[in-house]
Image (cartoon, rainbow, N blue to C red; front, top):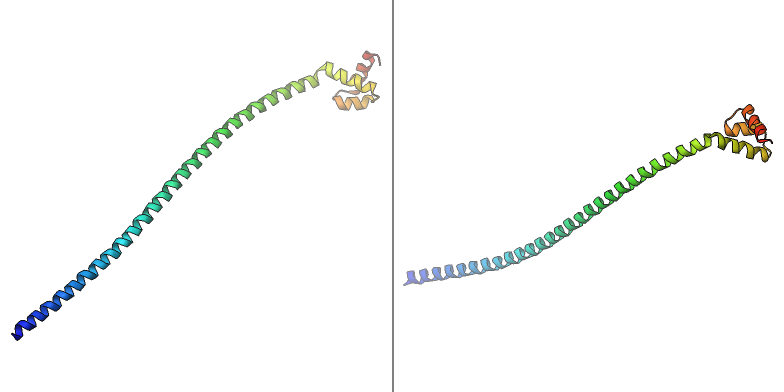
Length: 139
């Protein structure tokens, strides 16, 4: 009986050890599940942040495209206005070079008491031309 008692004791101790090992295993399994649950929630948070960042990036790109479109339109308008200004400047230069306009400048300047030399410098005409215009105007 001594052998069977020992055998029974060894088997009982082994069973208790196995039971303890199973209990430890289940405790570790619960801890692993808790960690896994935390990881899943963190992963969801990360995915939500990534979605938000992607949406924000799309809005920025759309805004940038809109600004580029507006800048392109403004550039076209500016080019159009520059062409109009060049045309107007050319017309103004033609008017300034017209004999009638130069004659009016000389006559008006003479009435204000400016000398022939001053009027010649202002109009780009020679002094003789200025004096001829003054004589024809009867001043």
